[in-house]
Image (cartoon, rainbow, N blue to C red):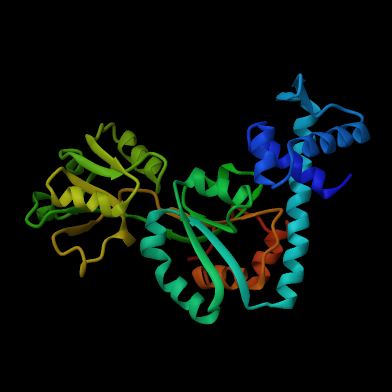
Length: 316
């Protein structure tokens, strides 16, 4: 059994069983891949694929288990290389952060500034998406860290550590009637069309639950994945906005006013997600601690070893 054979397996799976595309991606020949897979099947004593002539049409049940193990072994092999790279050059490399627009736009900029000043030779990449996409990127090894609020707890192969808690505000145009209310209520919010986050994003489920608990059916006229888009449509008069407190900046959002709504909704917790099978370089630990100072190197390393409760409630 050779790593090359495992790479062939993984690439065939990634290319949806298309041998030609797998061979092209790996810069090798299709007959060469077929021969190596057959040698591996002979060594293991099981068929990994179901074939129709020379064409692969399906993965067998044992094949699914073999591919899963092969991909884990390939990640471990890459981790070994990472160890060598780190000790050869501890201040350079790459770090890919998968996160939402709100985190990238409002929570991460000061952290990224500090990090790039400390590690000018580390190539930092931000990949944005919804929480499911973010967690998938880290789970597959395409990103090093996930930073999100929703959904990453659904991925059992991710270690999750709480970073900070936040809540929501209601944004309205100047002179809106809600600004005259001494205390904002769900009933008063429900009187107006609402612009807020898409269902997959940023604590939307907590918003829904708050209204449902009061027997209210809010009129959500537009959902978006981007806080700035929500504010734009509030400015245009489409409705009032419900968004993360951090996404409102009075100095920039001068055409809007913010009303604190933290007494109406459960707080949400932003977490960092790390693959259990990944190798974390020193500068990655530093990035996590810059973002959440209570997540020291020791705490993160302990969590990676399985000694910490991942869904713990941190002190913020």
